[in-house]
Image 1 (cartoon, rainbow, N blue to C red):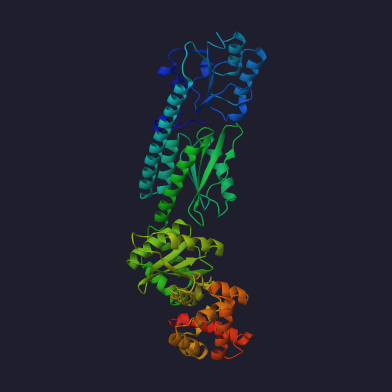
Image 2: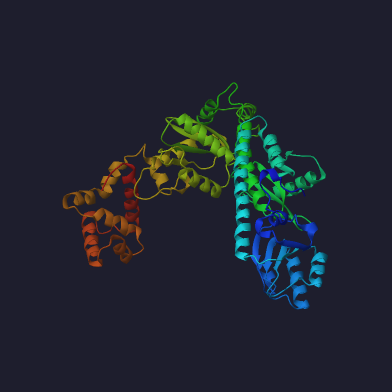
Amino acid sequence: MAGLPSNAGTQLPTLRTILQRPLFAHAEVLAGREFLDVPVRWVHVGEIPDIATYLRGQELILSTGVGLRQPRERLLYLDRLAQCKVAGICIELGRYLRRVPDDMAQRAGQLGLPLIAFHESVRFVDITRDVHALILQNEQQVLESLRTLGSELQGLAAGAEPAAAIVARLGAWLGRPAVFLDDRGDAVGSAQSEEADELEAHARELLRTMRPSRTIYPDVPLPDGGSYILSRRVGGAIPFGLVASASGDDNRVVVGMALDFAAGALGVGLVRERRLHVGIDRTEAALVRDLLLGARLPAPTLRESLGRVGLGGTMPAQGMVLRVRGRGAAQDLAAALQTWLALQGLRTLAAPWEGEVVAILLDPPPLLTLRGLGHMLSEREWSPGAGPLQLGFSRRTTLRGLPAALREAEQVLSLANLSSHVRSPFYGDLGALRLLLGLRDDFDLESFCDDELGAVIAYDKVYSGELLQTLQELLAAEDRSQAAKLLRIHRQTLYYRIHRLGTLLGEDYLSPERRLALQMALLAMELVGRTR
């Protein structure tokens, strides 16, 4: 396969280039002259017979010849270096070898292994430092070239037909075919050739086996033993597809980084392309309002509306409501949130709602994936100084159940500021709180709290006691020893407080029925805003 273009700064220095350095002024190529264009990855000083154990290929070996005076040892040494695919071997003539033996030069020529002799003494440490500096300088050029490529691809993402433009630029930079396969099976290639057809076939197999939890897939080795198919997923939790190209063994890291840039740009570009036409005769906010207020939209009307806002004409079977609270303009947050969710591969409708933001996730992914997305959403800094977002996820439901799902998301968000412990942003995780939230509007929770806990709260206010906290830990702990540890008090102090609680609440306050009532009252106390 064609090598990466030299003008992109992506090639390692070749042995021919290194031989032009001043330190090699008195070096002579004795064998393998036709193989001097091999790239050099590193310089290694090696005298020991089992040096092959420490090599990985493309090294330039420096030797004083100390172990090469016997014919059998020196020929075996060359054989092992050739098996490791080193770039070449340099031998310093003088103390151990006055000249390179004929059998050694002949074997190196047969193996295609460049053999270089130093006729004057040169310090190996100077050669190592000089060549390594050249390699590192080249790597810096690679990084600069990659950064330029990334900027170019991001610019192309904002244009028309971003996939075609991005893949074409990627292929030109790599100097070999590249292909993007989207989630609908369509292919966008950078070139047409037998090599491109082979790449697309491998990419289709990778796309078929794609797992949602993975963004990088194993490199697929090609039959020639030195080339690989590399791929990256485009999109997030539900991918848009994948982008792939091929690489040699010496530039897999560079090709992989270029594919990373391309995948990111393709994700942004496809979000924009698929959502280019928003609200021709119905704005997205109006569609969100209709769904959340329970408007009966016929299937053809809903399908047409989804197509017009860039979500395709596929009818969703289920939905989930995400309610979001954050600082700043709700309109800006809604747009940013929708773009971010789309980059994760979700079909999403988002709009401002009562000063906050509401999003409808159409055919949402599994709960485990949503938990990861929720964590990323809450950790991401959406704007400087804006602070974290507060989230409320409803349960998965049918489209007709979205109004009830909106209420669930609102209820979760109403718990966001409770300080007793961290709450899950998912309605399904709320447990007994779901019962209390449902009762809040039709039942006097404050009176319930007073009936169950009023005596303890009053005692604490008068005597500056800690009976309410003691009751909480006592009900939550497995036994009294654990409760004492959590409260950081002696067991004798705990027994005194337990007796006092019995006086205030009744001796049966630890019976199963009373325990449940007290636990519910402690939860309800947070909902009605009571403090200790």
